[in-house]
Length: 359
Ligand code: NAD
Image (cartoon, rainbow, N blue to C red; front, top):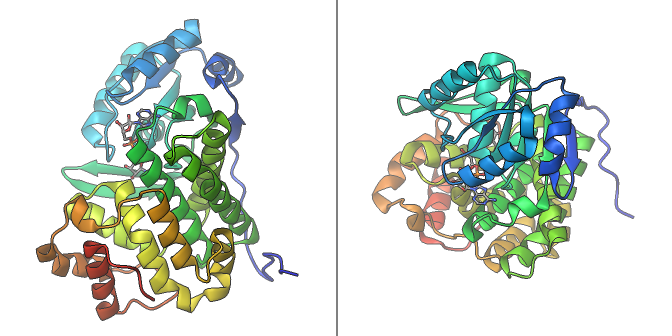
């Protein structure tokens, strides 16, 4: 018999958040706005998803105040300030974001500045909607804060709205979500609830993503992937992240590598590094993938769904490696295995070239 996830000592704080899974969630937005006691929603999207924003604005009828379609990657403060001016002009009293992590980021940045409630309709698997975390950039510098005021009040998940996600983002934002859950399993502040959410989140994505990437995905599969993304995002919002996230932040911040794709390349390598220190905690992940170790399971899964394998394909070069190593090993996050510079150098070299991960 396998043991439970019980830990003799742990702390768990549940955050208030309403989560709704529904087909045609868009038609429920007006009722959710009314539930919040609000009546003038500012709809947020990226320029690429402006049409989805317009259709949402039409769907909420009289409860819609306007639409700002300027959300962009890394939540630049100047974009937030432009959106804030629009919000104030329109006298909006709540925010409705429809899009991926970048649009959710803008919504959170506006909530931080105004205290307005947010309804988020996620259309990718980034999971930001489930966290109280906000990353912002100003003059090219990224800062991250954790504040309960940025946690969305309501999340509406609608499988039919995520079907338009470009195939490369299905893969990489799915791997990004799995990474949150995997790191949650060995977090120093993990608890049985975060661990069961992490395992269920990985299970849901491991089941759904191959159907989505093979083109046979039905609404059920898209919904199951969103369910996994929600669970994985919730884990990210609850517990601390370790080496994998440190490597991704160093590479993303230092060399402007794309966020989700970098997660997809690094995850099997980071887990191979960490797994010998916490084999018991990662055994359930190996069991989900039916492999001897979690890192082999993640590596085979990444290959199966066509995830990017080489940092060189994302723009990193061999000449960047020494600086990448410095960034990756400076101010390390807590990690189950101590950060050994030589081993991290070898890990980065393997990830650059697309060589198999090694413990
Ligand atoms: P994204 O939001 O930048 O989206 C990428 C592009 O895909 C955009 O043009 C977007 O409009 C488009 N898109 C998204 N969903 C679509 C759909 N269903 N159909 C068509 N186009 C669609 O990418 P992402 O991977 O969702 O989010 C990444 C960002 O989220 C990063 O900046 C990352 O830092 C942030 N993030 C934050 C947290 C947090 O807790 N703060 C967690 C995870 C990710």
